[in-house]
Image (cartoon, rainbow, N blue to C red):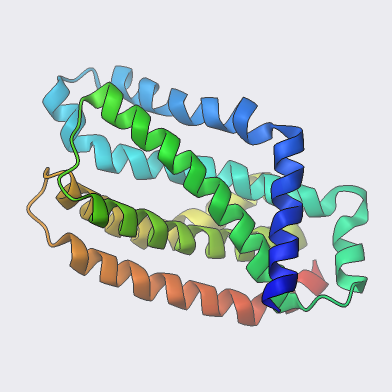
Length: 222
C-alpha cells in the first residue's frame, strides 16, 4: 500500500515539476500575499512582527486552496481519475499518495514564505523545533483535509467556488492552533506552543483517519 501511495505521490510531483505551476504561479503569489498584507496594514515593524504568524497561516490557507484545486484538476484531465479507479491501486493508497504529494508541495511553499516573512518583517525565531513541528503537523492536517474535500467538491460540481466554502470552516482550528504555536515560537505571544502542537496532532490524526475511511466512496461517486 505504501509503495503504491509513493507512486501516486511521485506522479503528482512529476506533473507539477514539468508544468512549473508551483514555481511560476503559486510561489510568486505566495510571496505577493505577504507584501500586500504589509502594505494593507500600513503598520510599523513591531505590529508586523506581532501579526506575522497569523498572516503566515492565512496566506498558507489561501495558497493551499489553489494547490488543492490544482491537484483535483490533475485527476480530472483526460479522464485520469477513471483510469485510476480501474487500476489495481487501492483507494487507501490513492488517498495517502495524493495527500503526500500535496503535503510536500505545501511544505516547500511554507519554507519559501517563512524565509520571506523573516526577511520582510525582520523577525527572529526563538524555537526552531517548535516552528518545524508546527509546520509539519499543520500541513499534514491541511493536506489530508484538502485531499478529501477536493474530491468531495468534484462530486458536487462547481468546485472552484464550493471548495473554499467547504474547506475554510473545517481548517479554522488548524489555522488558530498553528498561529498560536508560531506566536510562541517567535516570542510574540505568551502561550504554550507545544500544547497547541498537541491539539494540532489530534486534529491531524482525526482528519487523516476520516479521509482514509471516506475517500474511496467519494472518489467513486465523483
